[in-house]
Length: 302
Image (tube, helix red, strand yellow):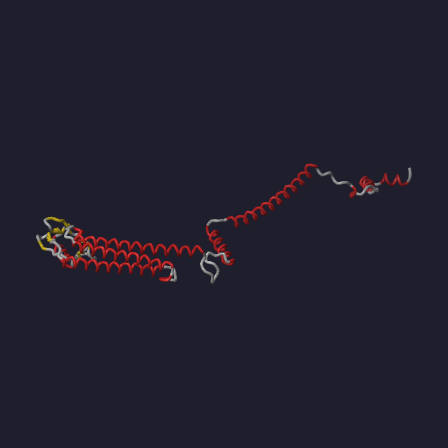
């Protein structure tokens, strides 16, 4: 046995063990790591892919929301947005000269001109209606006068009478406060209220109707005898008709003046509508003159 072997056999067991471990061998760093389970790797990869998908979806949703917001701004038509849009559109039209009124310094567009034409036409038509009513009233005056001049007795002879009562602001027609009948060659006026008899009698006198003179018959009745009209009576009737004809012409001129004041046409009397107003005034005035001439002939025959 060699010396070295004998020394080793004499060393303690622990020492031998120590020496045995110090023998050269492979480095601990060269030892491979334990293998990673396949399930763990797949799970980690899936997590990363899922997260990337969510991020992409979120970006797409944000883009879609932006598009929707932009679309909403365009198509919104209710509430304040519509009024604001209308203001913007109006401003845009104004800036491009597309306003209904046109740019500053220009005349109104055709639609405004047509509106003015329609207004002036309506004004003239209204004046024409007033004139027609005036002529119609005068026709009734002429008819009653001629009938009276011929000696015919009708309740219409008292149509011009207007009664002013204390409790009324305006005069009332005789027929609204009394009844008028014809009997025994006379007109009989019976008032509805005995207190109005004196006012009715006064109104008949104030009317100054030729050949009409009321007489009190009772507390509610007036009798008006109608005799054969004399030449003086017919002359008075003729004058009355002429005076009423002049009053009718004054009404015609008043209707014409009112129409001229209401016209939009700046030319007034010299313009298209002013000329038309004068023409219809002359037309109805000539009709009144014709009625007066006709009444005069009829009274001359009586």
